[in-house]
Length: 286
Image (cartoon, rainbow, N blue to C red):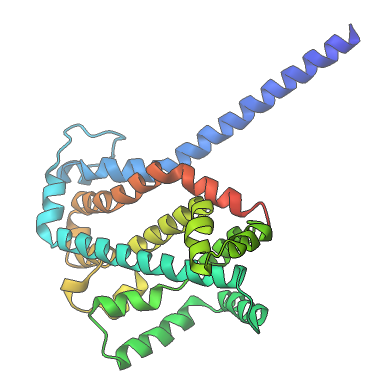
């Protein structure tokens, strides 16, 4: 009987613990999601309703005019197309560079490889502001301001992504590499036929993370682009705010922000399993 009481007590404690955990998670989820809810709610409020006090947690007369205003007040479609082009080209080049570099550090043997990789890792400790200053000076001297080349080229290298993919490549047994070499497979063939398919989750992960990084980037495009035809979406939002919409018409401003956020939300929802799988797989071996 005492044993049954102990088991019953443990079950009750477990249930209470789970209830507390779920209550905490629900509260935390509400706390995290509330800004997105408020952004969406504000984007469908009429301006008069937004300026009214107190503000309700629902809209009495929802409208989609704010979205029309957001797209017609400035060249939002142009800025979004620029961002799509910048994000896709930068990500493609980055994935190629990262894959080749990770393969070299993981499988190839050359003098000073460990020293070079150590220097690469040490670069992660350099503040990003210092790198931006150097890159800006180089782009200006090469007369690449207000060009997609100037926007893209300084951002195609990522030490962290090289490290992430290198660790993934190193999980493949050396015996597989030796067997491929015995069969006459070249290093490039081994990379494309064996390593890349086996490392697909990690490659998808760094691709998505780079796309998100490009979509949200602000400082570098702000420095390099002074002409509107090269503005990215983050700079466009700032431009819209400075031109008066952000001060006079917050709902229209929020409508523009919603339009900017939707592609990233869809991207994460579609590839969330690949992101989790890639990060988890990489973390199984240091």
